Figure 1 (cartoon, rainbow, N blue to C red):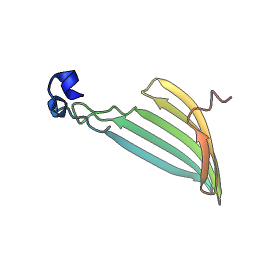
Figure 2 (cartoon, helix red, strand yellow):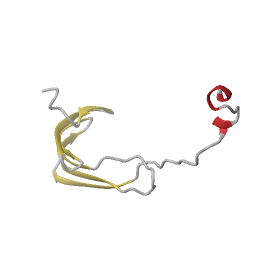
Figure 3 (cartoon, helix red, strand yellow):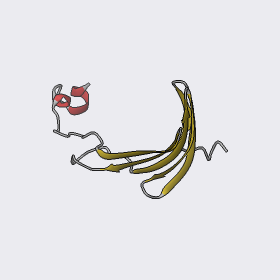
Figure 4 (cartoon, rainbow, N blue to C red):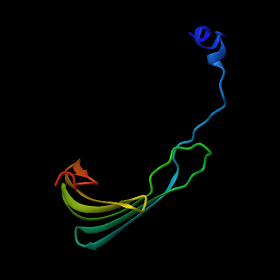
Length: 108
């Protein structure tokens, strides 16, 4: 096929030295116990480009308020993506199973 396309059977085996980097970011997570079984969580994920051609991770600010008991948890969340798109979500945890979304508005 290389001979048909490029006129040389070894042409497609030569590289162009293009490389791509994995997304890199700084992640800060804070969690504070408010009262017994009630927690306030804050996450900040900031994109930090390290490589010339790297995949870009989205910037995220996220906060949630959770109520945790033995084998059960529930909590709403608020997320801001790239400092402009706001979403509301939540989750329910039953044992090890977690069901939820960071954007529950389309469901409602």
